Image (cartoon, rainbow, N blue to C red):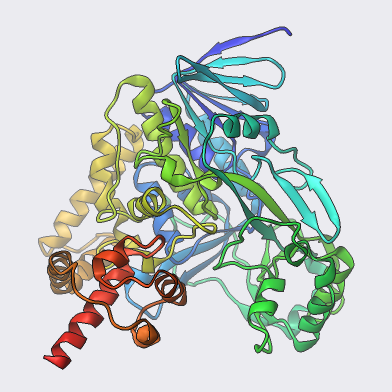
Length: 577
């Protein structure tokens, strides 16, 4: 076979949200980067829902943006609907979320990548890693291209051993009409890496022209003109409304009638799906007493009638999906343009990684995104950022970057992954962060930009922007708020409002660490502990820890849950004193 050789510092495998952020981050640190993808025209594609952000997820987007990442600015270039979730609650738990025009989002990501002269997008599929003297030396493509590099970032999404399921249909692929990365997956298994299977899914797409919008509850875009990135001066596109409907008793009967042909219930799918974003058949099976489940109808573009029905992800047979959709109010005449499906794929146990997302078994290899057992664009982008920064550090002899759970949601996520592993696709939630009072979405720039500047991963334009914003904050703190941007004024006001609570929180955490031996309340009373989620109750009941220290070692129990347990146990102690 004819071999063509290329030399780079970093090769990124995969052009999704993790891969694009990894490539851009490595390039910002000065590395010569190759982004290898099967379809360059699809780089930056939104493969599932057409939205960015949300609770916890919006925090991640803002944090990636603080390091001069791509996602927030691409979101602003493509946003056709804005909604601040949890608006009635404090800023710490509010989550910015946008609906994006798919085509415009993809175009914005590609335009941002073209601004890096040291980043090349290459067409091809990675067949195997080049491993020399137990270290990575690059990748070989299926056509024989050898791409030499000192570091490789694997951002393969759902393509590693990917299989698609819809009723009795079975196809190989990472997305519909796109081939899986089987040879690379076989090599990783051959290296003895801890690999397991996970599952995710997508709903059927609908023709919006066949939806009876007049019968549905509209959800307009927020009127106040906030943006995802402070670099964005104003909204770029017209805003559209979403709509809300619900499944019905008839819907649930149709779903139950189709379960015999369901790959999820027939055993064809081995991998565990995401707890917080289950398929509609799983919802009906688990919550059979409910008379309906909410569905958000989300337009996918300004010049395309396709609608994404968020809430009915499914792998049921096509004819069952059609009957299901037409049993829903407003969708009686709706036409499915693409049926939903499930995808099962390989992932590496993230406990094989360190906090730099470095795979210790193969020095020079970094992993980001769904290969690490996560779900969601935002989680993928945040991991891509960290993997890219550290791949460049490895290849170019720079300082490695580790984010702490006390300073960022990114740090929370990575700490959770590498210490606790996953039993299902990991999704970021504000409840996972014990320091969430200080980790607000609105102060991500203040928290993280100093580190971004220190590791030299920002462009001159971003550095000038940060300097100007810091000067404006200083003026507001000095009582000179005239002319300052409204978001900065609100940030400083919120800092002052939260100050006593933050001091109390820091004291509670310190005392909790001293009280690790404190006895936990009886397992039978965990349902009475305020703020403890059903997931945490399930994990604790299964493991049956007796002390706070034992609970801290239960896989999947979050520091936030430990803090809640500690406070409840202290309260019980005082009552019995």
